[in-house]
Each structure stands twice: as structure tokens, then as C-alpha cells.
Image (cartoon, rainbow, N blue to C red; front, side, top):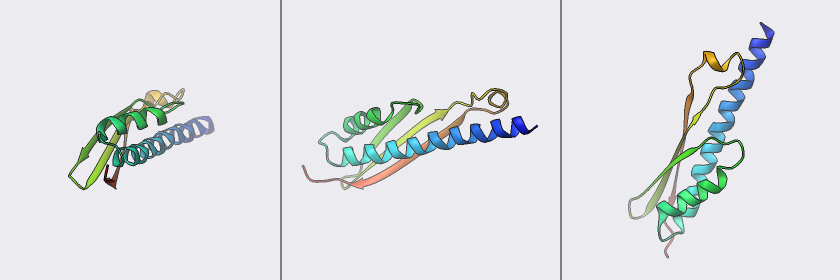
Length: 104
């Protein structure tokens, strides 16, 4: 019983780690997109740099409304911790950041 509880806590920590990685990727993408001539490609490139390591594969979208750029990042946190992972569905994590567009 204690083993299942500890594995459940480890799985929760993995999901929170992935959520924080997605939020950071959105911030970095928005920062890069706010100063670029092509915000969408700049955001995708910046997120790809952050994506390394243990972060899940991220899906990036960027939109501008003339004054602001908004970058949304989504990913699937796979629940693969032994014993616990098979009991839980994969979790969708997402993050969004908005910044003012800088003049070129």
C-alpha cells in the first residue's frame, strides 16, 4: 500500500514537471515572438530549444492581434510510472503567454 502511494506521488511530480515545462515554453516562445518579424516561426523555434531533456513533445500556436502576440503550448504528459501509470489516463497540459509586440 505504501509503495502504491509513493508511486502515485512520483507520477504526480512528473505531471507537474511537464506542466511547468509547458508554461516555461510558452513564456520563452512569447518572448521570442514579440521581437520577431515572423512571430509564429520564432515561437516554434524558441519552444523547440526548450523542449529538450525530459519535456514532452509540445504543440505550439501563435497569434497576433496587431499589438499583442499570444503563444499557446500544449503537450501530453504520459503516465508511465510502473503500477500507477496503467491506472491513470495520460494528462493534457497547456500553457499560454501574451506579450506586447516590439517594433521591428
